[in-house]
Every structure is written in C-alpha cells, then in structure tokens.
Amino acid sequence: MQIQRLADGSRMSKENFPQEGELPKLAGQQKSKKFNALKRIPIRGYCWLSEKHPNTYFISHYVFKDYDKLKEKDTKKVRDNWNRIEVGDDER
Amino acid sequence: MSARDLFYPKNKTFSDAEEKAFAREQLVYNVTEDLLIVLEDLNINKKELARRLGKSKSYITQILSGSRNMTLGSFSDICFVLGVEPEIKVSLKEEAPEKISTEDDDWITFVADSPRKSSTGTKKQSNIIDKRNPENWEKAA
Image 1 (cartoon, rainbow over the protein chains, first blue to last red):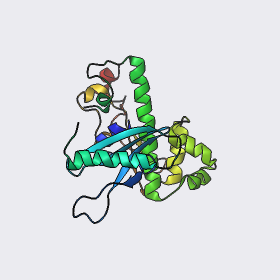
Image 2 (image 1 turned 90 degrees about the horizontal axis):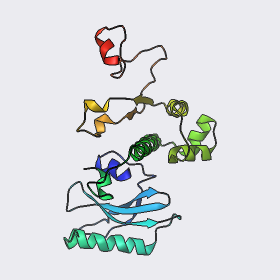
Image 3 (image 1 turned 180 degrees about the horizontal axis):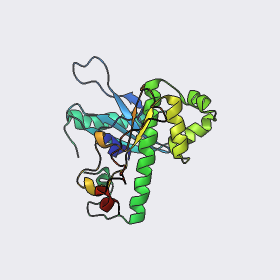
Image 4 (image 1 turned 30 degrees about the horizontal axis):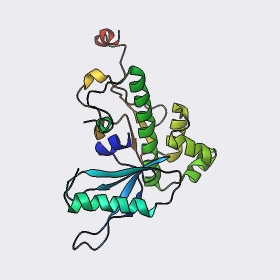
C-alpha cells in the first residue's frame, strides 16, 4: 500500500516515510542527500529517489525492525546498492 | 502497473476475501496517512490532537496507525478539531474501469484552513441521486 501510494505520486507522511540516513555524494555535490524508510512496524524498507532515473524510487532492502535506531550495516547496504545502481548503472 | 506486481506473479489471482481485505487496508492506510499529513502541515502533534478531542494520546496513536478502527464519527471529530473539511466520494467502479487511482480521484481529500460549511448549508455531491428526478429512477433501481 505504501509503495502504491508512492507510485501514485501521493504525498507520504514524515511519520511513515521518514528520512533516515545519508547517501554518498555524487562528484561535485556539496550536500549529501538522504534516503527514506517505508515504515510499517515491524518492517522497514529503505529506499532512495534516483538521480539517474527520473521519478524513480529504488528500494534497497527490507529489515525486520522493532527498534527505532538506524543500524550502520543498513546504511552501508543502502549506500552499496546506491553506488551499484546510481554510479555503476547495475540495476540487477 | 500495480505495486502488488512487485510481490506476486503477474497471473496471480486473488480471492474476493483477499481483495476485500486489501481494499480495507488500503482505505485505512490512505485515510490515516492523509490525516498525518494534515497534522504535519498544521504543525499539530498527536498530544495536541488528543487534548482537542479529549482523548488519550495512545488512542490517537492507535487510530492513526490503523490498529484501532476509526468510525466515521471519530473521523468527523478529528477533522472538526483540526478545522479541515472531509470530502468522501463513493463512485461505481464501472465508471472508470481502467483508472485505479490518481491524485484527483482520491476517495478522501482534505482542504486545510478552509472555513467549515454551516450545518444547514448543502453541497452538491456527484454520488447523490435526486429521487425527485424521474430520470434517476431507473438508474437507482
């Protein structure tokens, strides 16, 4: 349902679609962009708005999460996937 | 393309019970999400909403998370204390078979900061059938 709403272009609340961690910077970029989380207790899906593909969100991965803090390993996984897709052009 | 295509095979069919459950969850999710956005836009937190309604914060949390059923009465109360006007649209599916949902066709939309209409005022609704008009008799039957 969250993905459907996102795909429909409807606004998402900050409560259920918060910004979580920072994405890597692209060359020449001054400020880091953030990735978001699709929040539905106890599941959280990490995603980012693509720079390369207009109007496209990529979902990095889902985690079972009954705590609020963002884990470093999840940030790393999002960044690795971001690098693979946005820089390496590998969408598989 | 539906978001369900991401999780199920393309030829997967759903039973009526599954479709009904999905429709219910979708409505609950979209209404609560719209209310959360109104709260954010008006800069009102759940504690303040609870105070205005004379309810506990946990009640508000349960309502807005969808874990507690929201009646139309409590939905109206929430809109009233927020000063927003709920618009509920019920339409026949046959009218737009190809179109599932667009921003303009949301079932429930909100207009923030607009004055509430007086209780005696009437508003023309597309889903209201005027039974005094004979042309509508056949349609309503």
